[in-house]
Length: 142
Image 1 (cartoon, rainbow, N blue to C red):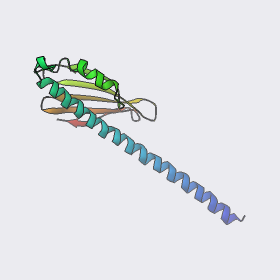
Image 2: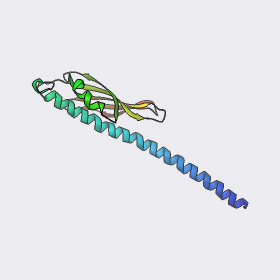
Image 3: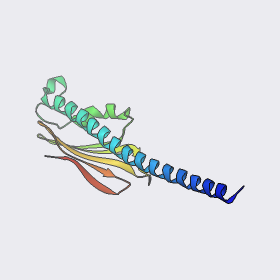
Image 4: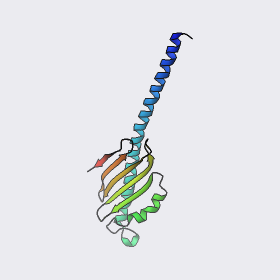
């Protein structure tokens, strides 16, 4: 093989490695955005279920104007959830605070976490812990 051919092979290999590297970077950023979107949907689902619980009379298994008791009723649904690994609720009469640990992991094997506050008129605050940057990022804040 000539010198030009070896140079072309080395240059081609270098370009392929760079293309793979940038492709993986783009996928990682996209994946973090997908986790945030998925989390927003899941928090809204839980919040709407909590609002339905709050509006139901206690005779029908609801909270009778309060979120207190929602976690006990909702625990069986979360057992079969493939997105949320662990959920903790802080309930009061006028809001519910959710602290969720997701099954999804970052590159450093730490899990994504979510903190959200839901009120009777909807989502009030939402932030996500990104394990790769090790920072809490506000997604929504009224």
